[in-house]
Image 1 (spheres, rainbow, N blue to C red):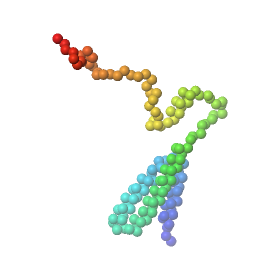
Image 2: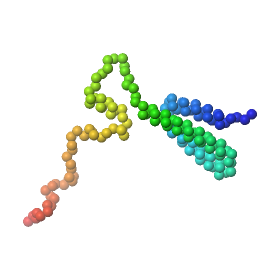
Image 3: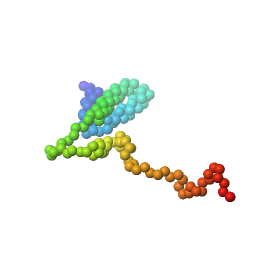
Image 4: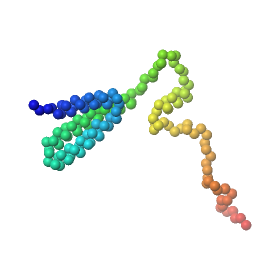
Amino acid sequence: MTVPYLLLFVVLLAVYLVYSAWVRLDPRYPIVAALALLIVTAVLDAAGESASSNTFAEYVFILLAGGIVLLLLDHARESRPKPARTTGSAPQVLSDHTAAQATDERKRPADQTLDGLQKEPVALVDAAGRDRDQDEQPGERQP
């Protein structure tokens, strides 16, 4: 009796995909494993083991498909709006400024805008350590 390795691999990958989605592991792990297995496949094919390399190529394909499923799931999770949590107490009324600050705090640093960081403009420094009266003006000659 032969062991159905491909079926066993698919079952183990499905268990990993469910676990990874539940714990929110990095969805790129199966893709990295597929790339490493693709290198092994190329080495086996170069060594003349075409039957083994064909089997590993099937595993690579399955790993890539699993990685894409995890990436799509992660993308769907991020694009879905998060529901507001209520605590059982009366809802708080936030001013527009407080609500804007709350939404800015939840954003990633790359998503935040840079306006509002500087409330008052800073005077420009022309040349540090130099006095303006020492500069020569065109057309003026000192005796």
